[in-house]
Image (cartoon, rainbow, N blue to C red; front, side, top):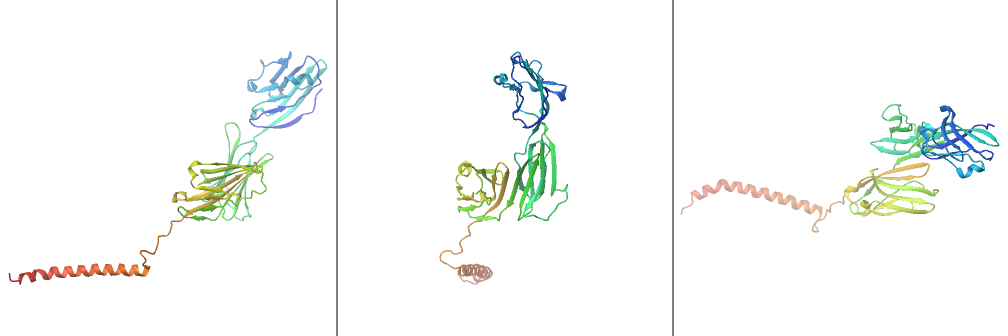
Length: 352
């Protein structure tokens, strides 16, 4: 008896169960084969034990039956650590004293988009995602929509797709950053879609040894589980806060413990005891299972203004005193010059 084909989709590098059942009976014989590869032997079972001498090298150490369930008519196959080579058509052949049965399973392997990374450098925005199968697509958009367009293949708009050693796809795209907009990068593969957004806020000013609050303008009110990460110049991690169903746990970088005052409920970063080395770009990254949102804010450290009042004198009086002092020096120099000319003559006419 033959059953219609079953279609299943399993995840790359993970485990997958190919279901197969039969009418229970004694003297069970189970063969898992791959018909498209000349009936390649995936797994065999008879004489009440696994028979792996003829198993293909490709599947060594990666297959198992649920042996305690076989007397109940369960011939399902567990396949571990899936690769792209594993996808295809499988045949499950079973035999007992009650008869034989064949069933077929078409298995597809996918490596869905898991993370989309987005960065900004010199007004060029870069979006990339790695380890994807089947081949992904990448699209750009803005919120609110922008009418600016760029010619494909230029530095402002360039997309490349490459295969890694395992047959998975890496995709990278660059384009010119559009200011006053939320720049949106969307990567799609199969039925899975992931999005990353980036926007730049107005600069924030601070002073040495002062306090400052850097906002993170990403809505979190409707999120139950997400990660919030603050970075300096998009490289140096300041802190990471993990939110799970109303509870949060924060991990801070020891190098920033003197500057980080607190993290507000809205995600704003409160800093104090600043110095000029803390001037730069602060990035707030909120990530969920589906999306990543990146907000950049430039912090400018403005030195304290020097005092204009000294010893109780006004700026006008200080200027007057300075001019008078310079004039006195000039007059003294002139007098010295004249005396140098007349003094020798005076000495010659003096009677001792």
